[in-house]
Image (tube, rainbow, N blue to C red; front, side):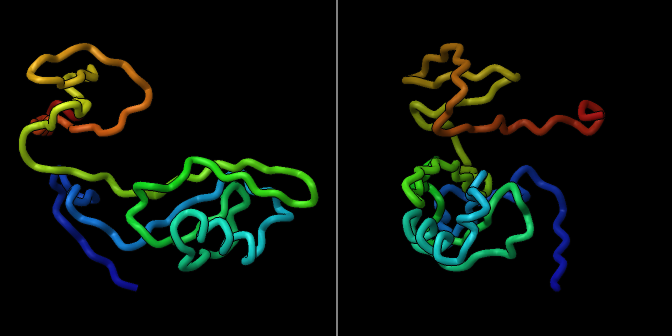
Length: 148
């Protein structure tokens, strides 16, 4: 086992937008127990980009599968047919937070003082959509006394 310590910074645990990981872990949520098999995991993994491996099956709420790719084109759900029944389960991608340095891109959602604003050609409009494509965090890191 390797342990690595790293000083805190705003980008700890995040990867640059330019970085393209070659594999991603996904979780198959709510998969019926009778479908918990290596054959099912491999079929789902191949459907989501290419199966690599399956983690130990000791968590009964989800199955965890490692697949090829950076996790940007994984479906949100998959439907599996078994014995004439169709089971639709959610897929959660364990994709790390991504960041880039510089100004926000046009059309990118910006988080500013707890209000989501849409940056379009220099105009900012209030926006409270629950489904965001991209999120850019403010560059300002609050002083320690503001955090506690």
